[in-house]
Image (cartoon, rainbow, N blue to C red; front, side, top):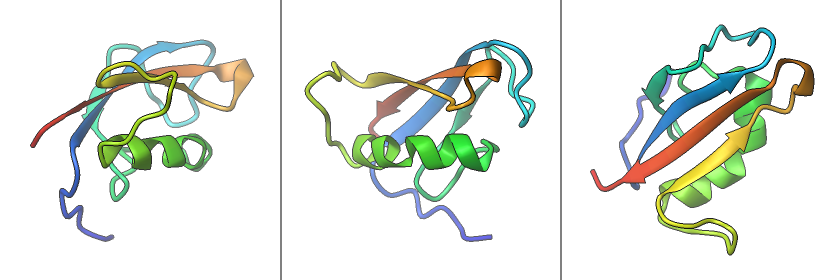
Length: 91
């Protein structure tokens, strides 16, 4: 496994809600550091889906509808929907 070089801003994920059962076992309230080098235990589908936003967010970028240093992302599985808040901060 590749080592996380800790580049860019620190991003912490917090599971806000889980509708149904997360196939990776995530539960509401769980927090963890996540990055472009560290999928933090997310399933491949969720990580693949959020990767472009995560990369932009981790390296200080933004999109017009993002405000501040927090964004919300959702798992692509609408039957077992996981909602996660990403918060970035300086290292």
